[in-house]
Length: 200
Length: 336
Image (cartoon, rainbow over all chains, first blue to last red; front, side):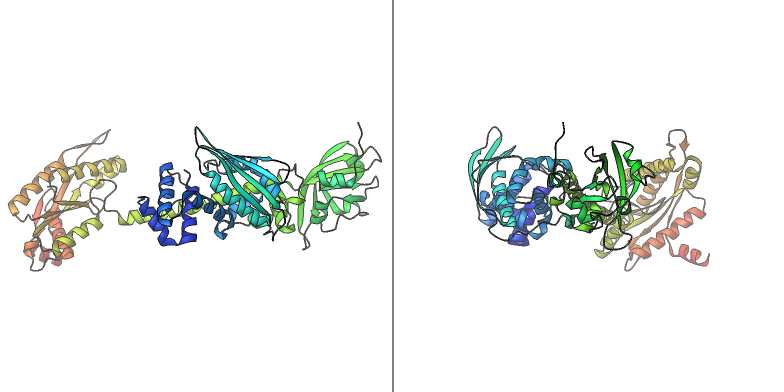
């Protein structure tokens, strides 16, 4: 698994539960280090061990943790880049949903090592959508639930989401039903194109 | 086929277009271009007053642009609050068959990052078919990934330097380095363990380097390092502490005869010719020895000095020999 994903898990645990909890997670997972590097690859087992350990240390089931990670990715200040990447998808929440089809390709262009599941959105025409997530491993459905909910808040939209279908073998296919109740329910946090162009 | 399109349609398809009358006056400017030229490209203004045409080279009148039905154009325009702020835009100009006027469609090209900044452009300022937003997306993600890689490199660089500082091994010979040897001497004196200290200097090494080059010199250093390892016990501590200087500590060994035998074997080993590919190199060793039992309170740096005095004595007596330290030697050295 590419380091970025492990770093995301680490930041989530640290920023939500504090550094000591993260250290407990790494000990529980049997890691001989405490910090993940975003640009280095790690064996998949490491990520699995970290999530298993988080379940024990944080006393939450993995589905909830994965969903919380999704929300964290698009709402925490430290993860502003992720929010911006997704806000490039469009001006409205619906535009954003439509842009998810392209997400895997977009990410692949710039960070080829980052494995992003293939997403496809099917609008039902009545304000409800079905988001299909195909990937090599299950679990992304929960993360996407968190991301979609977080981005809905970001756009000021009110949505309901539900994981309706999970198939794990031979390859993972998960489906989320999204119901857009109100497009402008709250304040849109906005998206300034120029903000990301400043030299780092 | 001819279709009539309104300026609203043009706005939607190409928000950076301008319609110019046959007389060369601006009739209409698309919304994004209005934003960039800060109202400069107003209806009624002369196209050539507002836009300085760079390409086609030297075109200063419509007649010159009109010569072709369609032309690639590059123009410079005042853009921004300060005088002198300019942007270069590129695009195409086509002659309108209806009235002989011209339709010019422009794009920001490579100026886009700059323009997005200066005019606070948003996705709405670009046509959906325009891949500019994707370009901006890529730039932003690449910057983030590049920044992360840079941070990683800096961290690795720091870790490498740290590792080098903490290293205990001489990279060339695989022997311990000075830092490690100092720690060992400290341990021996702290724990009051009797030991012998031997300093070994390579003779004729400079000639090897000068004659056969540094690669040959390295080969010789590795060969003599091997001799030192072979002629000492595992519990002895062998280190390379300078270019051609070695030291050995013999824990628990203070038998002068035994040390003499070891020194002779080391010298004999050093004197075996070393094959460096195109030639054979001949070196030897000068050795100085001192014992911790010579001192009431053995001190590492004092013992190193004394062993070195003995070593210089070996050198001055014609090299390729070992000398045991005795106070008289130091006196000779001090007087010399």
